View 1 (cartoon, rainbow, N blue to C red):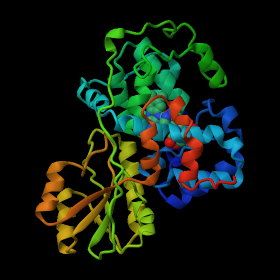
View 2: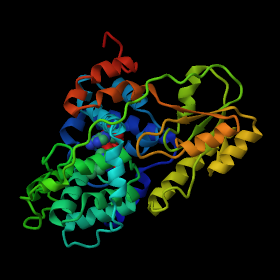
View 3: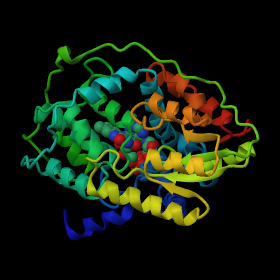
Length: 394
Ligand SMILES: Cc1cc2nc3c(=O)[nH]c(=O)nc-3n(C[C@H](O)[C@H](O)[C@H](O)COP(=O)(O)OP(=O)(O)OC[C@H]3O[C@@H](n4cnc5c(N)ncnc54)[C@H](O)[C@@H]3O)c2cc1C
């Protein structure tokens, strides 16, 4: 990567206001061209895509507010593709939520090796460096990269997914695991994604052309196929949050604006920002820096909130504040941290109830993620209405 590329560190600001300001600019200047240009990977600063994923993943901004902003400056019909992409993330989370064994098998199947090293394939080596240094890859680069990893270099999709897990600043257990499985032909049996030199040349505007370097006629190994039945139901019970004084909302990487969202419940609550710096120690330097930056800014923005870095310190704080109920963001598959029986029981033994709050966005959409995206997609208009993004007459 050249010097200009190093500025890529600036492409992910830490402050919510700055993220929203950048997105407003994107809506005015680029969003109308998104359907035409989103597949072009033109390198830093990746102006043809929103770069919202690190924030949506942590809900520093929400899907609903992003779409509301987009709709102020663009017509609904021009946003169809962008809306669908936002819902891809929702769909993957809902799909995995109903099939936790898929994630379990991925997690347990990791064999410990994942560094790609230099391969001599210029585009691949470039993207390795880009990912390590900036925490980000354009969607098309992720698809090509995963395909080359599996079918040209002959490495396992699990080791590739794990490499992404440590380095992506937007790492999401669902989008990443299922994105790799999709490329490997494991989402739709045998339907593999093949990276082709001509396609890379076209969509990188001639920057790369790995002619003769890629395996462009790979075979799907059927032994890798495993059928997963839907094994888990999603609970739709609405959390009962009535007015009581002894409640706290704990915001963490699963939902950094749950406090704004809960405000509509009109209850009094104390707040706590939670960040365990030792969780997932294999995370890259870049991702660690990004997470610390976001948390430090939140601490400045929310001076009345406590700040805890371990379960023990959280429990001590809850005791000292005489809290009886802690509201955590709901933890989907691959994100379990607090939502574990030993922790919940420990709170219970101290007369503290734990509530895991699922936003309406997920609650309404997840049940439709039971089949393929094609059938899920048919529900998008209704979901936009139900979530109040659209009014009936729009
Ligand atoms: C192998 C592989 C691994 C991936 N791993 C992740 C991951 O860990 N985390 C992650 O958020 N996305 C992942 N994706 C999906 C996609 O590449 C990123 O969401 C997208 O590149 C983020 O950039 P953006 O915000 O500029 O996207 P935009 O094109 O601006 O899209 C807007 C938003 O829509 C959602 N979105 C767009 N495309 C997809 C998609 N294909 N799948 C799911 N959601 C999508 C994201 O929330 C994104 O922020 C992966 C894709 C592949 C092929």
